[in-house]
Length: 178
Image (cartoon, rainbow, N blue to C red; front, side, top):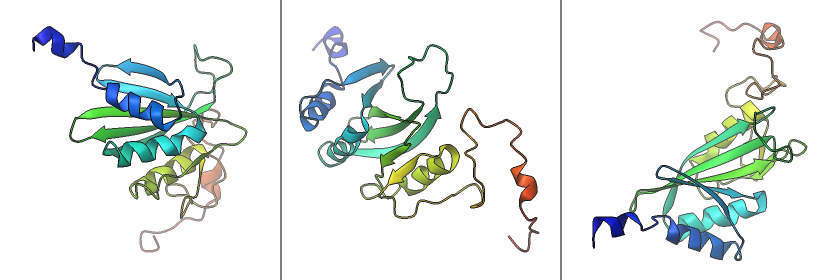
């Protein structure tokens, strides 16, 4: 095989084909950036896609993150305010895949993937704590970085940079008490 022929081969073709099959032939919106493939899914497609990628294609979950697109320039008006991305890696093929799911502001919730990847536990808790996106079926969804009494979500774009004075209301703990 010549070098030109090997560069024309799509390393993500098999993954996209498997995802399309699992999702009942749904047309997937994709974006390619460098070696990564980004696939945009609806929330009801997320769990079947992740389970198939793990069980059939041996992908591992390496990161979950949240984004708040409030007043983001160039963003379509009908787009979801929040987005959660799942970064997956196949150790055999070195293929990276990013699944992105929009989350509505009125009901910020997604299904939990902790039952499939135990490592998702703290990542989902962090997103819940910082953005207020809950994960249905999570075994212990509670704050992980902020105190339980904290009522806001500090990584939301509408949260003031200097806070709302909440930290002044918490009792001070000494090093021995913590």
